Length: 169
Image (tube, rainbow, N blue to C red; front, top):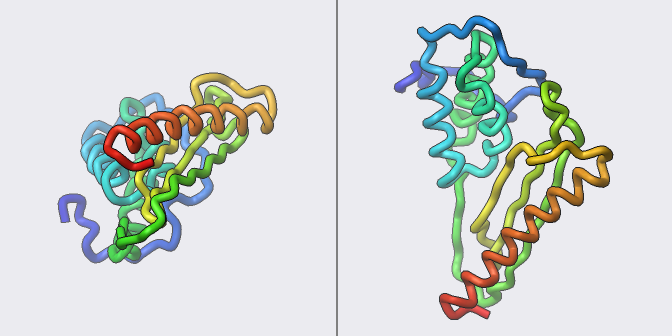
């Protein structure tokens, strides 16, 4: 409602495969920063499926134009079609911690950095996720995977210690 997208046509994916680049002339009349901020809030709390798209959009908070605005509105169209999606937690007996990581290779055409991500489950419930540009430039797809794996390993160690602290082995 806030961004006049209540009657929009739903989309099946959060972001089309497109190269977003910084623009030289920002259109400050567009509420792009407010929209991306709202999407960040949503992706951090209940919608990990939009994390990658929101991460890409957030890279252009100070240099956006109509192309970026259209990409952000596309995420809203995806949310319109998937309003029943979200995190669901059901009681389970097995509290095994499991995780997955992945990366692309040089997905950022500006800085040639890769994007890495991970997700961790406790039983069947998703408890932690991330999608972000890697801090260093990988020289191969294998190296990009290792960097993503190292970031996921760091998160798994933190999660394991936290779970031990609250009494879950």
